[in-house]
Image (cartoon, rainbow, N blue to C red; front, side, top):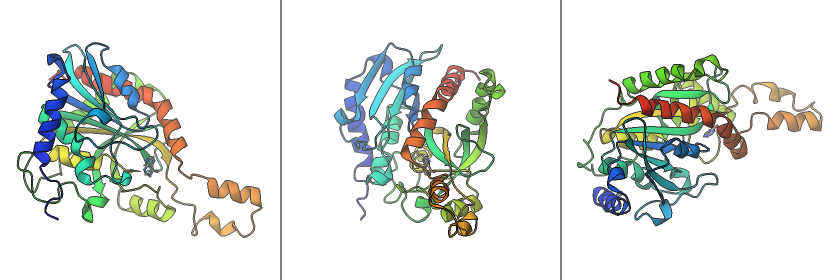
Length: 317
Ligand code: HPA
């Protein structure tokens, strides 16, 4: 059990050697990594068309293979912005619920570290718990609840890998304040504050999945202080912070988690409802993977524009 993540540094350096062997000099040392969540793979189109290299996860040594529909798995290397900042995009990610170990879930983040990445922008699709949020809103994360981590499913469990960071890393400042300010500034610069979709700051609760939450679980998460809930991101952020990478993270609210309805709410009426009303009632607010992908498609353009604007401004002091 002490070999939870054997050779965690050596495996990443092997993978980096392979990646660099496939990349021109201009792309060998990405400064920023962007993790594209469900339906947000279009972020890969925001970078310059040239130079650009795409490498499927399937061809990358040591990489976990993504199994979820709608999550094509590839690394995209390119440049963006007036400074031609070299970036690495991760289109598709490994999730814990797929059966990967936490070591594999976070492997790509460590590969980014070894390549020299200093800043990571992580995006995801999440369920909204805060009643003030609408589907399609964007949440700039300012904190998290690592629920799986708190009970021991934690990417840093096991012997510390000193090449990355210290044994007991602090996470009280995990979500970089300067980057969050830049995100809100970019939102205003794009005029996105004048439209219906809003940007919030909020707390992300990480659950292992793959089931969506029960109503009682949604109420519990809300009580604990979570604004959104999802099945990714936190392991990557933990490993990024361990390795000293600056973190910015966005959730796209793709569905609103059901809090009120339930045995304590209007389910009290189910005895007297007719079949049509009952079907409607029980289906209400039920999260489906299709719904998540659909909301992702619609809001993805704004999210892409936002990330692009942040990247364009990154060199500004
Ligand atoms: N719960 C957990 N993960 C999610 C959700 C949700 O409601 N929506 C998108 N990812």
